[in-house]
Structures are given as C-alpha cells and as structure tokens.
Length: 207
Image (cartoon, rainbow, N blue to C red; front, side):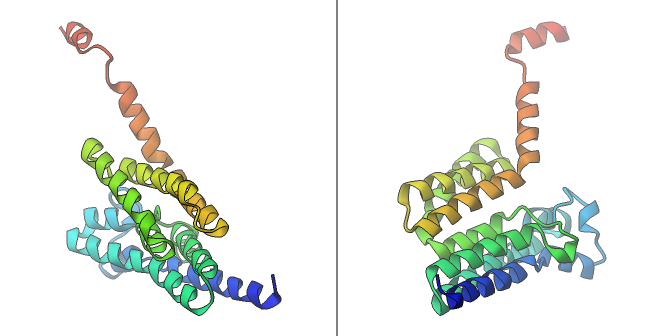
C-alpha cells in the first residue's frame, strides 16, 4: 500500500467521521429548547426525535442520518475507490455513535448504517430490510427489529463476500449496531422471563 493510498484512506475516515458526528436530532432539539437527553429514551436519534418532537421531525432526522452515511461512501467511492468509500461509511457510523459534539455520546446508528450500506453494496439492504420488517411486525419493537436486521447484514456479508474489505466492514457494522442495542436485548430478555410458562398456573395463583 503506497503512502498516497494511506493518505487517501485517512482523509476518507476523517471526513466520514466528521459527517457522521453532526447530529440533526440534537441540533433541532436544541433550536426548539428541548433537552433530548432528558426526554423519551434519551437517545439522540430519529426514533426518539419522532417520539419527543413529532413524526415529521423524526422523518427529517431519519433522512439526514441516512444521508450522513450515504454521501461519504458515494463521494469517496467516486473519488478514490470502493474501499475508501467503505471506510468513510464505517467512520460515519462511528461518528454518529460517538459524536464529539455530544461529548462522545450519539445515536444507535441504524439510519446511518442504512445509508452507508446502501452506498457500499446496495443489495445488502434487501435482506436487512426484509428481516427488519418481519421481526418488527412480530415484535412491534424497533430496537429488536434493528438487532435482527443487523444480524441479517452480518450473515449476508459473510455469504456474498464482494471484496475482503467490504465483507469485513459489513460484518463489523452489523456487530457494532447490535452492540449498541444491548439495552434493548436486556429489556426483551427481561420481558420474556416475566411471561409465565403456564397461563393456567398464573390464573390459579391470581385466584
């Protein structure tokens, strides 16, 4: 790898990270005098923005978060290479999750992941969205559906393997988003444990 290639990749990572670290949910909330960290789930992402500030605001945040992942990938893929684009997209997701403008805090990265993956390898979106939709219909929980969709990305990346770097990036992105939903997994597990195995025994106990 030449020094110029290393420099190109470094620029892609820095620009991608900076783009991802700009958080529209936090900016809009601040402009409206809303403390998003103390409202709803406290997460500065599209879902909580919709919950706290309305569905239209949530859609605007969602679209911007998607573009934060998509634009760096498309830009650096066109200017340098698909590998540079993939690194820029991965950095944008990291930036969204660990924004220095929010003191290292950030969203869970689902929307930015959709944009980045769409720019990296568009066909990966199909299984992600299908799995997300199926699990959401069953569970009615965005967080659980996001975990399932991310798991679908990991499996799809390993099965398709377009290039070594894209494959590794896809797997890492999926695992990273899953790790950001640890609280959702813990809540789902707790809810499942709380459901009695035998409904009749619950009725007897209640009686």
